[in-house]
Image 1: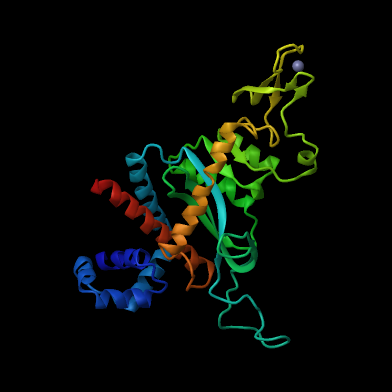
Image 2: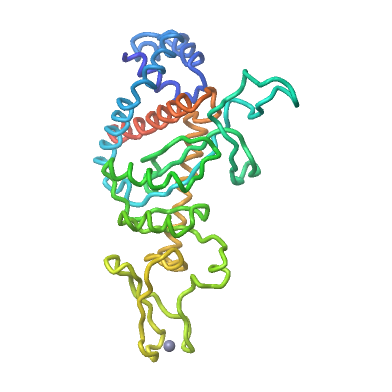
Length: 325
Ligand SMILES: [Zn+2]
């Protein structure tokens, strides 16, 4: 058991794509073999992976106990979260047929994967891809994953947010703020956050209302009205005439997507939105440092297990770091 759990950690720590390379590394590496107590065979690794898929609840309980220990060590964890989805291209090429009008593909096919869209990052263009998406709620301060799901890439990202927020609460995190890009913008998403007592910080889509400037603060002949605080119980924000000459000199605006309780355009909103980059860095780290991609497994249960084990290794390593100091 110790050597198999160790193999799981070795696979992520060394960002190895397959169990066979993991088993080989342990066999060839005397120091690793000594720490793990044995060198598990490739077959043993595959059998262990299958057992982990069959007992997903036990693995989830393990992840949750690591998260609970981390929260104890880092009380700021989970106060501000950022949510986003990131591409995990399938270990399959996305074409159903071997060639045009040809037979159905059987090798390199993954019937659970789907076609999705990814946005551009610094190193490559955006565009269509075939595979899965990791939907992740990350702590903006520690940049550690707190809740996640793996879905086919064609599933809508917004649909994952309520479940992620519920998982956060179930894991004892009580975020005050949730930061998301404009792909998540919409009244339902605003309400999903507010109904859980979480302030949404979501970039606005260029909808007709935004084009018409309806998200802007009120204004009068004396100038643009100033934000004068929000009342979460009342579900509204207060705005004041800059000179106080108007009657009434202040108004309450009911919170909605256009006028959230942390208003668009305020310094606080901008500072919080900048923390969204935490989720980008989080994805980058999982992919490059921990071997989340490239995928070398097919089908949703295997891809999900791979994501769970990769993230567990990262969390376990972060926990070990808190105990070293
Ligand atoms: Zn005025």
